[in-house]
Image 1 (cartoon, rainbow, N blue to C red):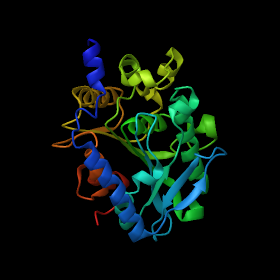
Image 2 (tube, rainbow, N blue to C red; image 1 turned 90 degrees about the horizontal axis):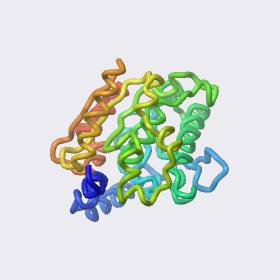
Image 3 (cartoon, helix red, strand yellow; image 1 turned 30 degrees about the vertical axis):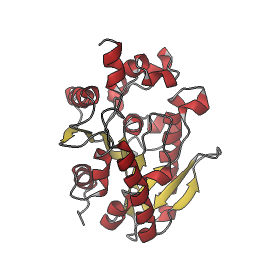
Image 4 (tube, rainbow, N blue to C red; image 1 turned 180 degrees about the vertical axis):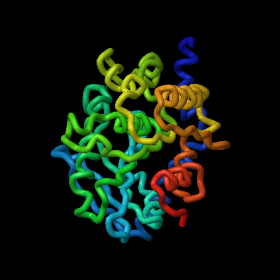
Length: 284
């Protein structure tokens, strides 16, 4: 890959000419969901101001939980902007949790502290699930873009060693539109906004930690994503399968990088159907 190829690999804006329209839908649909469901419960999972999460609760007692990790190139996004999938989960009988976490720019450009924050968010959810009617033994994770990378890192976390939690704290996950490593990003113009040392690259390479992957995983991307992200979805799913782990590859036909996550809000959409099947919940 020459420099032009490296830059194009992560130029999701160039590959998504309708980006302003889609992100506007994210915002208006999130507002509409809150108007119907009510405001989410807000809890702190850490001491920093951004270390808090939104919990959209279902009325079903002892319900499973889906934790959604938003994207934004490790530098953008907020929990409030990603409320739009909540209604599908709530109607199906699950709680939907969206953590806020810092930006790499808050940490001298390193994305590694973001990994640690979302891990602590999941640990908080496990420890406090019953307080909002959730089942700590049925926690799943979903992530998109850089959030898909972080979600994959959650799936290879040493929960017992680092948090004293069950090794199978997460029962499954769906990771969409991610790279799962930092090697190529580090060389691209998009990576110039980050500070990625050799140690950070190693720590955030999911493929180098697959020995700790025990939960079933769905790897997804849109057919209109950049060629690199489509390639990485296929490569990563193949690597997971070769490691003897349970994985399903989904290519969402006709969706770009930003459109594909909207299918998570639809029980009959590509991602929505996959997550409900993984969580053994009805499409309602």
